[in-house]
Length: 158
Ligand SMILES: [Zn+2]
Image (cartoon, rainbow, N blue to C red; front, side, top):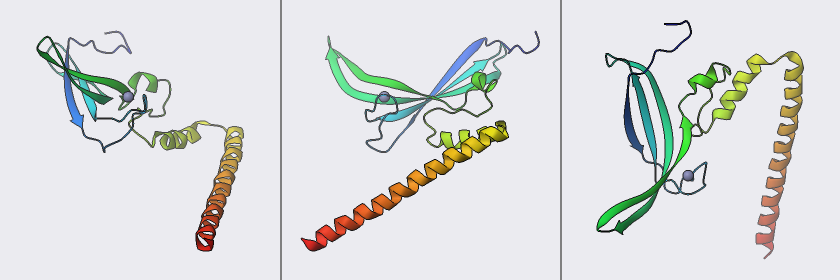
């Protein structure tokens, strides 16, 4: 086999698992409520049936009820792709452990990893941005406290 080349899949196998989500969890793609999540694991097998690669993909399933067509009952639903557990191919060029939309805190992890790859000038620029962002958050907190105080004073006065 040529160097750097991945072994070829001879057969593929797929497992699908349903994951319940809290009611009214909204989809990252279409913003509709998610009925449930679907975790799809795809296996790549060699000629002897050994697993040589495994990938996990997530989908939001939007259930839309049943319809009857010519005596047959048809299930109505659509799926939105939410991403993979990990991105092998992309990861070869970007060592950031990219994750799909299913992992809500992924940006925090990206930020932690990016810090290891940037030079001093970039770190100083990032420091300025972080300080500006912290200042905005602090101002927002003060504004929220003031708004709450005004609301309480108005309730007390009426
Ligand atoms: Zn959707």
